[in-house]
Length: 575
Image 1 (tube, one colour):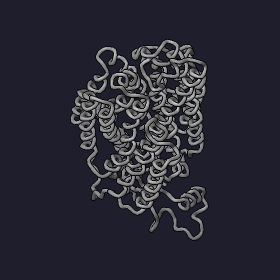
Image 2 (cartoon, helix red, strand yellow; image 1 turned 90 degrees about the vertical axis):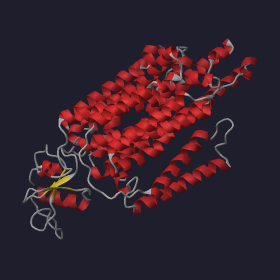
Image 3 (tube, rainbow, N blue to C red; image 1 turned 45 degrees about the horizontal axis):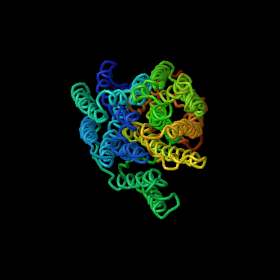
Image 4 (spheres, one colour; image 1 turned 135 degrees about the vertical axis):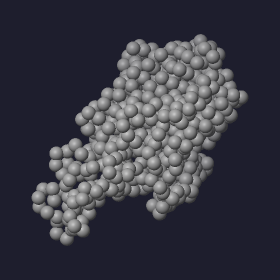
């Protein structure tokens, strides 16, 4: 098998220069940072917002879940559009929608309008995150993408974890409305950077065929199931075992089955079934679901824990979450550098999953009086694991597909990660509400009249009698520990998934290419090797020749040899 010459094929080159990549990253990461901060910046501001707008625990969960729902449902759609249309213009469109949603949220007169505004923001964030990952996959080969993915992972980690700190500072200095209004002009500046610095290679000409049935079914399936998880069992809503629950679950499952059937036949499926069922992608999706749950739940409920469980101000609550910021930053950066240097990514994912699980299990032991230094050590481990996992799960998937499916494959991982986060935030909110109600009921049975009349959804401790406030603080401490315990058990699925992933060497070309062994001509391919061809090539590499009945892999009339990467020492390693 000959060495590859990737620069001679359209789409199969080794990617842009380091300077060009850094210029593009300036724009991408600035937009990406704004999107990720907006997901978590309200973490420490939520108690203040709910107290001002007369919201309760259910309203709080909806303020977060509405954004995650819109984010999750639209991410695959944005990703597929990125495969069909101009990525730069799509990114600019997402920024415009983001600014609109931010302005609506900052001027919200009530909780209902705030939730609607957060949904608009979620639509924009789905586009920004999907397009950022897809654009990186378009201009950087997987073998070099580790360090750049590390930069993006660091931005994601810092934005996710530092959001609550920024939110606390803004709330204390300016008021909660500026939590939404300040990011809007910054997003406009990011749009200017996109226009000036982001230069993408020409996109392969394809006749756009929008899979409208797939889009409708995807939205119907995801929203039905998430609405069920979000609203079932909530005060004033419907019970888990009810006709409404049955209708939502039935609709979601029927739409899911129909979606799979439609996608198998669609010319340009929103989520290509052949991509998401590939072993690496499927296992990465399993890992991403649990990781998303741990990431979003920890940032959402840690802010409440420090404020309502330990009695700190919003600003101090954000400061106390800095260990998670540091861990995420270090985890993402170091993991990316190690992958680029050594070309090995599975061991990084395994170590990251172990760190995340260990941190979550340790955090499951906290209470309202746990020393903050100890809590900081636990969330440092959690942040390190999450930081190293997030972007490198996407990297593992991007390494298995060509540019034709880069957007769909990248957004699929992001979709399921956000779905995991949305389900976790809602489920953990219900768990915490139930725990608070149980604690107040127990206090009432002990003879406390104040506890008997207290509202478990009250977010303003100052409005409660001192004896009841103490009960609520203790309940927030033990309830947060319960959330971490559930997240820790779920994280074991992440560990199992990354252990089962088969490591494929990272290729040095942006697209999947194959080289004719006789002419040296390079061409882009979009298919994957099937098991029969893998066996044939391994047999040929061992010197045994092709198995009987099979055509040779190369030579006159044969199929050109496919190159996956060029750092190996023999042809067998390139498979």
